[in-house]
Image (tube, rainbow, N blue to C red; front, side, top):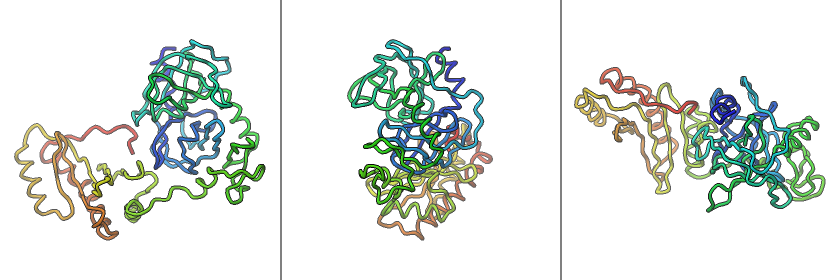
Length: 363
């Protein structure tokens, strides 16, 4: 198959994974989502999405820092053409097709070759590939010309071009088989003795088999712990009945939907907290009348402000971190939620503004 056919056939298997620390990729094999351990960042819960799957929370059920693998529980979803792991030996020069979400650019696909089929790094063998991969590709699949998984995109060498490394398929099969044979959830693989450890058997974050300190156990036990203004923002969002885990884009940004309004919140290093709702795009006519309407509303709205950025009409709530209180933030964001869902319809129906294009499965 050519690359286009492979992408079209297997795209529903490709998962985007988000955590407070960043985003990565994954793919469905059997009844789990495969990704890298460093993608899930030691968390017990991450946010996933796919072509046929809206953003939702999912549990990390296996974390293996030895070979940088993790498994995520697969929610109910329909996949017509499931991916399978290759059973054939990979050779130097074989075609390598990498799929993932580098820098959040969904379903990016690059093609190259296997530069070296067994590049040893420490005790682990890797496929060295020249298909371009970047941050965000981690955890995504590397496929052969038959659409079979030959590896998991794992890391790149900084300040180089087209030097990517993928964990070979046989490590994935070995880990899957061992995990399924254990028939238990929430498993950590000890990096020292290499045993699979059931999380509930771990005491004080030490491996019960060899006694080594398991940092991943501590991370999973504590979870993500926001503090300061970030914690306050998330408390406000929760009070507005917004699922903070789903809304969280990073440690300092969030997004949610209220009706037809899409709201983005960013907490900047200079202390500004900006909540923006992109309402619609400028109309071709009635522009002067619309300007008058927006200026009039800006004179009467409390907490909120209309603005125009190039072709986009935006409704915003802005506050400085030193002025943010739970009461102020709750009022401001609540008004933004309601007003954004109201004014986009008014601008479209009354002045001929147009709805902006939205990235599929953005929320």
